[in-house]
Image (cartoon, rainbow over all chains, first blue to last red; front, side, top):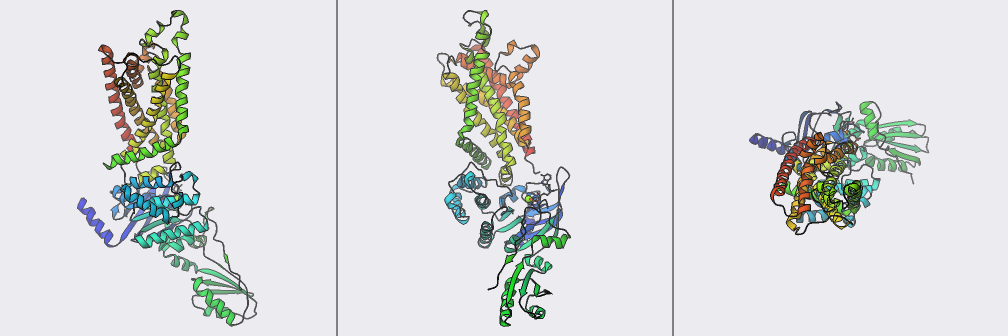
Length: 340
Length: 277
Ligand SMILES: Nc1ncnc2c1ncn2[C@@H]1O[C@H](COP(=O)(O)OP(=O)(O)OP(=O)(O)O)[C@@H](O)[C@H]1O
Ligand SMILES: [Mg+2]
């Protein structure tokens, strides 16, 4: 049994696969089938995003992988250990940032970190040093000696993340790490996660409601709904399935510019209505300068220009044929760009 | 030694919270004063049976020769305080589950036993602190606890050993219960249903010799009776000799068995309650 496990470890680590799920099923005691035969793999150093609406089964999947929920059917391994047969080895290899905020309100920020370190058997001098580094990383140095009940929601989320990282896990599970944060704080969180991923080769499994988040952060994404994975791949690929961003340009010119737009690299579709063009772009950032430059060379005035990023809702709509039943997630606002 | 360290770390967290919020101690202490003053006066046989004797001394004969009723009552009231604080101490554990803190423990590389034993220990320490304070209160209130001449530190240790053993057993029961239940409402319902009968079917407040037969039979096996009897023997007599000593030793052995058995049963229940959902 023991030797078999070691052999299993080596093959898994040899492939650099840190998380593997095969036909995972979770049926809760009340007969709710929260997860229905999902399979995926996460490689070492990858940021893997689980994208889905409320009740899709994201938290349930994390709970199974972090040994909190039993696996009804199927097989999962984390850090090379079979989750069902070696839960304590799994626990030793992971950090968990849960969806709910679990830092103790009555304790100070630093005390929460030290407690978390003790529960992961980090020697106390090492813990103090790392706590200092992590507090700096998440910009909580100044608040370390304050009780958590005086923290804002954003500060709590950042502390929670630090608590999940103090013992330098190989794999970090984060359940909606930016839920309820404003845009600035959210992009700060993304920065931390990127930094950790880059510098410490940390493998990240995270769930989110937000496509922008998955887009900016994740190497690979799986869209989950009603307990099944609908599609997975690089965020760019998913966007391409939608055809990309929609750029809307209104010009003050009677000329038909359709072929001009079609001639620009990366433009995948152009439609015209009066003097307004809807242009589908897989990569707006690249195509936009070329479009603006081309138009100004032709001496054509842009009277209005805007673009919409594809939202999770649109990807979801395309894949499932219905709208995301998600009230919490605000639709991504269109970014308005006025021409000079 | 990791499980031991984990238990200490978790207990430390709970106690730090407790001491940081002294408002939690105040109601406990107020209850102690209230019980002693209320029971000490309203149940005082010297008041209840005024005609039985001019001095009231003979009414107290049934109370093991205690010089004042509060002297008789102190051990019982402390048992009562232990029961209630153990029972309601479980609320913190239910909250830990509801707030997700328990999940962070369950996904950490610590033994399930350390979660259970830290629950037992934190409730025990909190309740024992109140037991000490209640003892002090009984001592200072007017017409209160009168210790016999020659009462020494060993007598004091003996009294609190009896309380601690009762406390361990109770803490195990209520910790296991709190880890099993998922709502504060159901915990409070069970606690209310169980605790009062448990206390009144014991010799904590009145000598069980005065009970009707069926009640006496229950009271005689009730660990609360044993703990209050053991503590009271020392409170009233100081150092024990003869049959008093053997009664005390017998009670203590009974309480040790009670504590060990409930610790094991509680552990089994807790392990089941801490299984993955
Ligand atoms: N402990 C439980 N017992 C029974 N059913 C549960 C339990 N936890 C979750 N469920 C059900 O399982 C399904 C999936 O829930 P889950 O929490 O995994 O969704 P989620 O994708 O994390 O949603 P959210 O975005 O709202 O956090 C839901 O239908 C939910 O009601
Ligand atoms: Mg969730």
